[in-house]
Length: 94
Image (cartoon, rainbow, N blue to C red; front, side, top):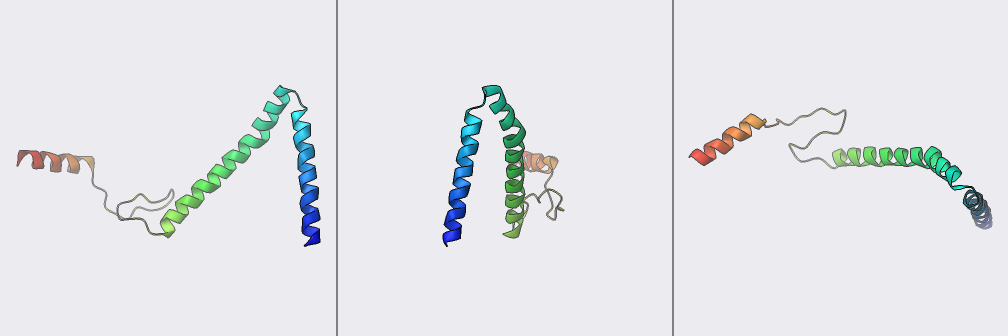
């Protein structure tokens, strides 16, 4: 357990050094670092979350008529707009 604590202390000290270094840079350089490193990181994390939720929703069994995940095949019959309009007109005229 002692090595774990010392590793965490070393990592915390390193991160504090990185923070101080970034805070000491001029604003345009800070902005460039955010765009170059943080932007792609956020896009990657968002993609992983999206794919995870997409697969989890299929794992727990979607309701009939729900859309399949991207790349999946639809198995339920989808009602067309014309069918819905026809049912609506029939219900109003009867």
